[in-house]
Image (cartoon, rainbow, N blue to C red; front, side):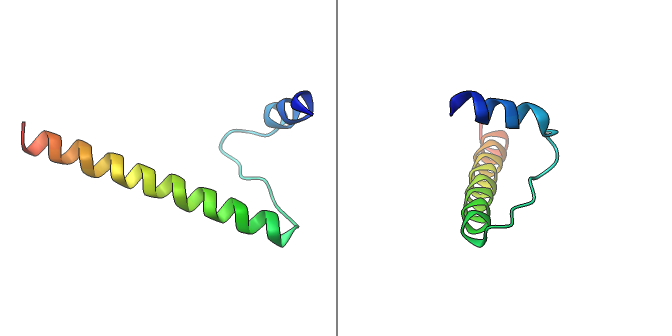
Amino acid sequence: MASKTKKTKESLPSAALPIVADPEMAERFECEIAWCIGQLECMMKSSSTKDKDP
């Protein structure tokens, strides 16, 4: 199973998102992407406040 996921990751370009036909999987992808965006926004906010107030 681990080798299968590794092979899939290698075959897909890092910039491209996989097209998901299963609605349940698509929903999970949306949640993960939303979480990643939230994490990025938090990092951006914390880094910008650090720059303003040393």
